[in-house]
Length: 192
Length: 192
DNA sequence: TGCGGTATGTTTACGGTGCTCACATGAGCG
DNA sequence: CGCTCATGTGAGCACCGTAAACATACCGCA
Image (cartoon, rainbow over the protein chains, first blue to last red):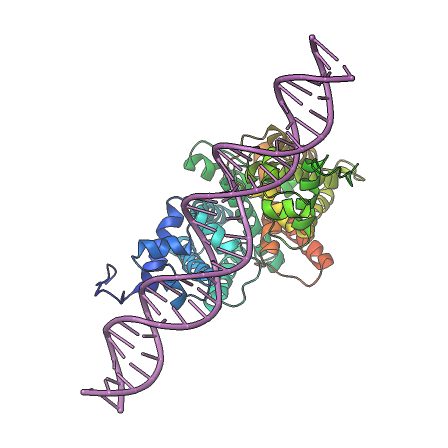
């Protein structure tokens, strides 16, 4: 299935092949091109246009898949967070996802306006809701929207700062530790 | 000076012209190319290579300038922050800069590794220090590094989430309000 | 004053990109 | 069996970043 039967002229599963090839490229080196994907799939340079209107459309499909993967990372094998520490772990998982698949992460979030892809906006909304529910569950007394935004931004910002080398640390474990520490520090700050 | 004397063959001030043209393009529509800059300056497509090794080098120069501008935004006409509210205003200024000049902001921060440009790394370090000093000044009791990272990440994350349309609001004022609210919310959260 | 070196700009060229359009193929349905 | 239409092909356009060889003219030195 996935390794498609090539009967010659028709590929049989081009759309899926293109997406998995793109995903693999994103996770190894970075820059993929439609033409490279076509090459990879053993198909002419313009064949991808039969399945995606343009590059953005393909990226939106990748982004939607990535957002689903991220959601899975944040939920699977994890109870709903019940404490500040649990929230910290959620942030760690978020950042680790970004660092494990940085090019994908940029595709997922680094696009201004693409209300076109319903699949994608839905996937993004689910991430938002997930974080909002988590935050308000632990801190029911605080303005829910504001707190959810703050939590998301904190994780998102750390992800970008480490991805782009603005913050640095030796190992993934150390980064996780610092994310936890940052989360704890800002929660502790109000004490005064 | 800035509007250079064009004596014909030699431009007289190409490097500066390229940078200001690039900056203007970044602030209007987005995508600039070396060739477009050359066209703009009325010069051959490869002339820019006399002043910048490659596209990255030019972007680094832009980034350094942008970082200096950001620092100015965060300091000029502003006392050193003395309260949590002051820190919130700092975050608002940070986000507003990103939203006012999003393409520049991406150039400033959206590069993995470019230890090549001394000018640039220095400018980035100054931003880091600025925020660290501000945070530890207001909250001297908390782990300084962790808190500085958290504050930076919070502002940085909100900047990216609004830039990329993952969070939305009607007006700039409203965004500022939400940044303040987010900052306040996460500081209030520990109270429980 | 004249001359030569060098910084700056030009020309040409290569390989890559996204994308469009006209055409070819063949799988699936009547 | 034959048609249709989704799918794949091919040639071609305009653009990009970059390199190499060449042209110009500014500047400092004899």
